[in-house]
Length: 207
Image (cartoon, rainbow, N blue to C red; front, side, top):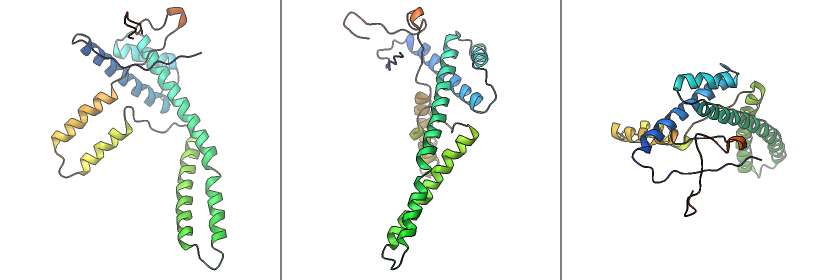
């Protein structure tokens, strides 16, 4: 049985802050690099990729292994989502198309309803093609590591003529914090958890 604990670090001391930021920045870099290599077919050997990242970041091998296995699980889940989406959306467009054909029988009292159904058919066909394409190619769709909403906010700022460099710089600071603001650690019973990152209970029942 797997147990997943989500935690937020509070009361980080000034000495700990730069170390944690460095680890999270390196970990975010390893996640993005792993995704590009595995999805792009540049590397299939997970163990070799973890060793490559360990050599490039000069971190203990446990950190690269955690990053590689997390992204590997992410890709498998995305591919499964493409299969589920393909099965879900495949029958939807034909059903709507049949309803439109039935509504077209004279007199045309349902003109507005027909237009709405045709839009639904177009949307559902686009979704079906999207999932079907990824299922056929066995390719996971792109992933925004961080926040998709924050990523799209960048384009809103660029499209705004009144937005200056200061606003774009503020967005960059927020984006960097979201993108490189997490650590992931796999523990094992024989090692009493993860030797590099542990969760312990304090005397006041704090974690």
